[in-house]
Amino acid sequence: MKKYLSVFIGVFLVVGLANSIYTQMTKEPPSSAGKAKRLPCHMKLTTFERCYDKEALKKAQYILTTGNFDFNSYVEKSHYAPSKLFNYVKLKDCDNFMQKELSSYTTTKDKSKEKLHMTYYIYENDVKDPGKKTKKSKLYAGYVVFKVYDKNHKIIYQSQVDFMDRHGKDIKKSMKCVIKSFMTFNKTKGE
Image 1 (cartoon, rainbow, N blue to C red):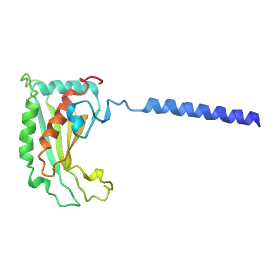
Image 2 (cartoon, helix red, strand yellow):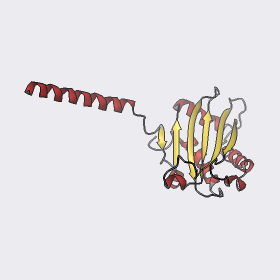
Image 3 (cartoon, rainbow, N blue to C red):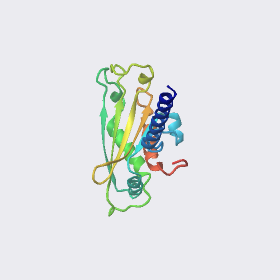
Image 4 (spheres, one colour):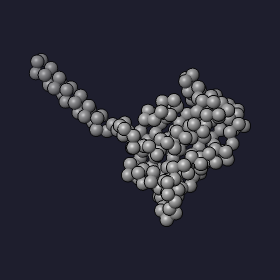
């Protein structure tokens, strides 16, 4: 009986150790994905970000400083609840703001470099969505998602920042935050 008990405990410990090692090896590093807390705007707004390729990200950050970029945009209106946000928020105004903010990072004009491609969209929180069961999931008014792509249209970086005002008065803060998140990723302490 003692022999079987010893074998059982030994196997149990080996399996536990192997599982622990596997979990540690396959765990994603904290700086590559998840809820962000690097910047002051991350402390005020719920922010998620993910870098898919750190070397390509550095290149993308540099290309933005040359002013050689373009972006696409769109909106996602609520489907179950009546859409109201876009009665107050106009995509054209947001595009103008995005252009101005991105251009503020331009330090040198160099049209010979490859072009940086970005997309952003504004999502209106659908409070009547049957998948949203908690009160917390219905608190925010929406979020801004910002994606950066390489020349082969492969995603390099993505961030998402919530906004709270149902009329979108704080969308510009969220837009500023997604751009700053992109431009400072891997450059701030702890990254």
